[in-house]
Image (cartoon, rainbow, N blue to C red; front, side, top):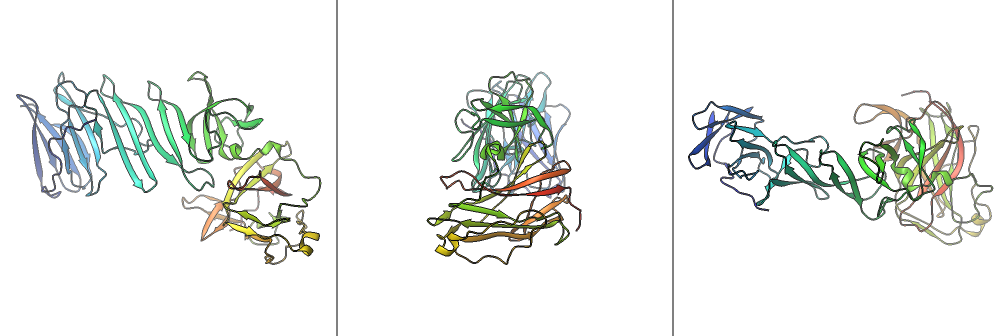
Length: 447
């Protein structure tokens, strides 16, 4: 790829100047004059030959410091690119094709500014052989994106490929995303890659049963579920959700939604244990949720204990909540990560009498935080009816460092069994489940 650059940095022009003219030859004998007028709001217009001025764009007060005239569509006429860098390396560009039949410019409008990685054309580079271009942006050390486009005959941009990153529930690092597109510009699939991606490879469902939803809403459970061996194409992402279609299905086949947590934890394999564990890890959750004994909507208290025989290192422990309703419908909610911890092997007296969780709403409040080296107290916090950064209210619990996280998904009113789930990607074992307690939703909304 090669960019045809006529004139680049116009640092000598003040944004406060009343008007700045930039002339160039669209082709020999056909001259265009581009005028940038105004200060707080800059107006861009162009006049071709002796024709009338054509309004092209309105821009903010950042200096227009990029002016390029490549032949974007390779029709023999030089087109127009204007851009604002803000003095940095990210040029936010506006692209205009010259249409000789109309003797006017036509803007190449970004086809999906809200959804794309860069949200606009950033740092465009034009293909030297065909009507195509790529853009690229960087918004941090680990956040960047690229966008590849081809031009249609009508001058619109058809997306070919986007790349970016996304961080999913409770993950430490972002996954790499590559978007592919249909001819009409609709997303065909999103390939996701990275260590620990649960649908790695060909998108095969990892569990015997995977719940599908008709909408990204835990109350919109579909009558259909995916099964082990089914292959899924991912076509959209939302917080906590992936929109999918069965691989090979028609583009107009109904899409479904999958909850990301359901790809990590086989919630349908959970069954209440017949007896408390005698070794390994034990999670203990206490039944003070929704009661009036303590602050707000009750208190969330959680211990993890090592029952032996050896010490256990939790490198990246993650805590999830599993809600089970009276119809055995199961919903997973990401809660938070906990700091890495090494739980020592229990002393002989502790191993002989491992801690037992308290069950039910009538349970006494647990003792103060345990200090034994084989036990970690992970939570002893009120559940608050609290606003988030967007001003939305919900039940939230402290995650530490002044941060609060949602405690419940948007569940229907009713009685639920609540089980806490512990996972650790660095551990070779599967999820660890706590005892179950019962909660009645909704809780009183006390602030």
